[in-house]
Image (tube, rainbow, N blue to C red; front, side):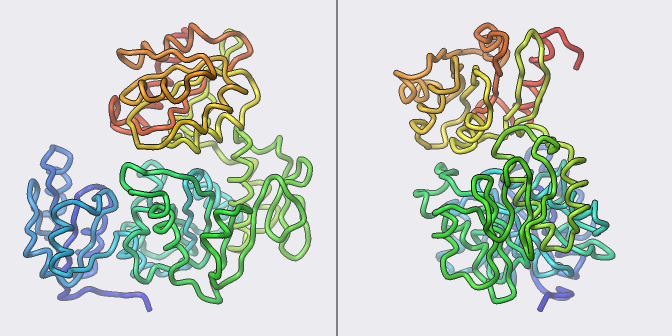
Length: 459
């Protein structure tokens, strides 16, 4: 049963980012006695705090009141808070349990839920699923971990009046870590690969949080899964109906690429759209499209709406985004590739010779898996940022590399100098961006602006 009100309930929210602020607003709207705190005291945090105070929320910036948090009836922890911070260690010592913002929001959702998770492709798959359903006339609320540009945090969606026909949420491993009752009506797993090893001690711990997608499955659950050993192992024994998507095989129930046709197979095989008509760059986006069309079909979208939706979808920025082509060189912005698996997928998805920009913050992943793909596809790799020296060591003996110090303009300029007509210059860094930028979006925007500057094209 979903909750309706929190009258008289003491709710403590840890963290004043977008998710934490959304949880505090939801708590206040439902009648909760709400306290939120954050160790940060920068201008953005103070402004968020002022906005919450205006609606009656008690706010601390620059400190946490651990006793007050421990005494709350419900403790909500924002996904950006690592599990080993002193506050959570203190709450753990007091045997205080907490939940994620995702779990808190779920308790107030009043419509069926599609949840999309995975290592890569989550945002494209979630946004495309919502677009396909809307094309068919379904009222969809899109949000979660997808980012403010595409949709709000789950807690803000839970306040929607009237509620939509369906919710579509992108959900991360950090959000899934602290769920209790969370159960999607349709759960989507895009893929699995090592990631976030700067936060998890082992890849098994990361996969265990992803597996919480299935935690409360029952016979009524429906699952959209890739045909992969990792996905089968993670979902082994999970109740519910299981359907699969795969761009390399045919004939299974679910969705697949039949020759060049994206095909849906529920009751019988139905061709939906030719691959050439899907406006997404890269072979891995075929899998994202197949996952989305299968999910939307399970939610009731018809074949005609699926085809029209696939044809009219606008590709999202920073995800194999075609920037421009000049002097015979195609520039591609894949700044969202913040792990090795995403970069490997980009390399394997493109068919022209490449100059690849790699670098950023060291997240602890091995770069050895990139060596063979770079050797096969790349003319050169330009290495930069905090992790450049380790990249140089681990890629030695393969594709020629150039390590560039200095600002990002020097990095992009070096790539420009190495590229030849017919090449792709690909920003697919394989790491986080926080040594130079506030996030992958700022990194991608800087790349796009520098490309226009170097090529003399108007941006």
